[in-house]
Image (cartoon, rainbow, N blue to C red; front, side, top):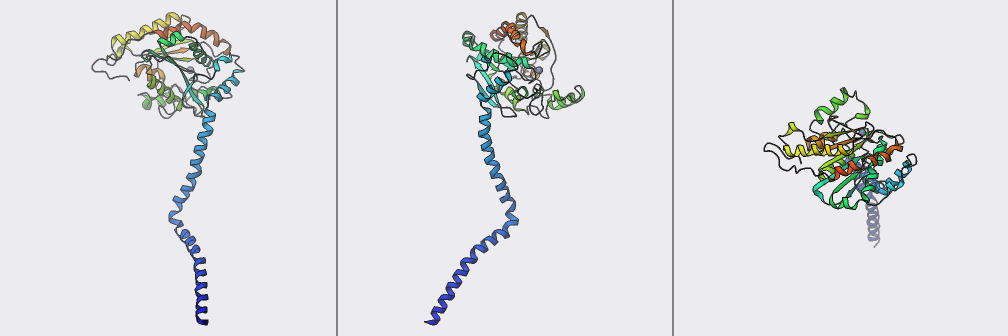
Length: 349
Ligand SMILES: [Zn+2]
């Protein structure tokens, strides 16, 4: 009896001891394994907050990115411009991706007939003020032209470089310091872009092509617009050089584009010229990574670069009014179908 009670207490003590000891060994086990699993465990711990911050970033980004916020920012910037705020209405915009700083990259489409699409881009360089007005005013003008939109499709991206434009001091380049008209992934980019920038442009930070063609979200946005809408002609609006430049399929590239197509594109240039007689039409040439090179030369899409005469905001309205006819001419002009290529040529896509 006594012995059994004694042995029972021994068992009880043993049980208590084992119970107390078990978690200790578990902890020790963990400790002893620590060396081998430490890295992955730490990595997991490190990953988790990063993941959750990503998702919360995503949320905060989407609010930052909202078109409403962008328009608010634009209205605020408008205080010094004194342009009519009606150009910053919030209806009708679509967005595709965001800028480096997370602002929405917006565009507007008028019409859905896709056989004769015109793409218009403005404010690729953020310190060129007058094109910003031109792009937004163009959209408000198109909204009042239902006939035009019934017969033709026009796609307008009025603010390709929102970060450059909405900086305290506007900048030509984007938030990463890259010139968005030198960053297209043209065939000569790898070989020439950096080389030319360093030699001819003496590493001018305003003309930095970036380290890789198509590296910037705002460049990708322009590429996407071209690939998505297959424009038959492109107008890109800059300032203040006061001319029209044209890049398109050339005679010496007849291996790729038919003669009829090349001529038809040149006639487009002539038709716009007739309606925009204030401007000099010249051949400015193109650069590695430029839109004229990417769209005009390589893809054979007639690409017109309009350089408004100044960056003076007070003149923006006049510039637009003067170019209405030329713009309409560009929209309605029917470029010959480029789909019939000569045997050795490849499709420009
Ligand atoms: Zn420019």
